[in-house]
Image (cartoon, rainbow, N blue to C red; front, side):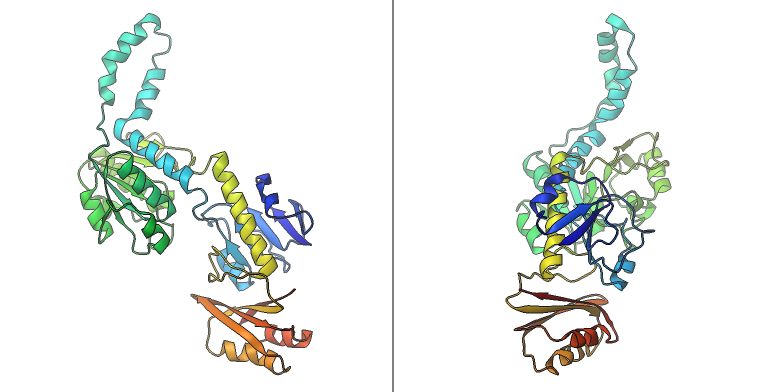
Length: 390
């Protein structure tokens, strides 16, 4: 019986993946095997020795102490693409909001309350201040062509009649196949900035992307370009964006991540982080997180982990040992030696690494003794050992 702790209210759809016969799920579980989390911060949370995996029902993992988890051999999963449609739809709305000043017009219309029969006349007289260009025929630049960026690019090209240019040096084969043929490939971010009338960012927040929407980047854009940031607030340097809006270099800035610096600023549209706020998205994320956590707990299968290598496994045919260890030389021979010394043949052995972390999986007819497993766990560089048997 596996024990799962939930740190946020999460959709009951998880129970389609976590059967009551094999799992207990509780917000109060003191010694969990796994954790399901949405937005709750875990940086100050004590991580018990029992904890094997954490699954975040969403894409961002800024609320999880990744380095701490890696040092304790805890797999961390996220759910990329599960909320992609919800975010992509909002980005398309953001294009309209940034182009037509719809939000400003709506706020102005509300200010006419109490004018009685004069309202229609006032509307006709004042609406000219909210005139904005159509999207059709304009160029959209998409920086980051993962699940969300690809959806936005395809919809803008095929649904809105825009020209689309995209850049992503790390694009996956799956994302590349999903792109419409009419989308132009840029050779750099700078090329996108220079050619696009509207630019939308769909990249992770890390040391390389933090503050990348700065004065230097903005200076490369077309005069009056509209920027959309549905990734993270920290991608943008607030003072640089505000200065560019004030002098007309930028036409508008649309973001799903409001900050105090951006609220109340002319030509800034702040949406209250609604990207994944749909019932469909919440269910998709919860289902996907629960399934990934289940497969890791039961089989050791690793899919969409942010700190361990991808390693897709089915139920073991007989016996399996999974070792999480540092990515250093001679680990395979020392790990396998602990098993072979007991006369057990290792039928298959798989090793994959991700930066400083590695995972080795050995399949065999029977598990070695507890002493052999303990010997593996005691090896320098080994972080965690797990065993599985049918």
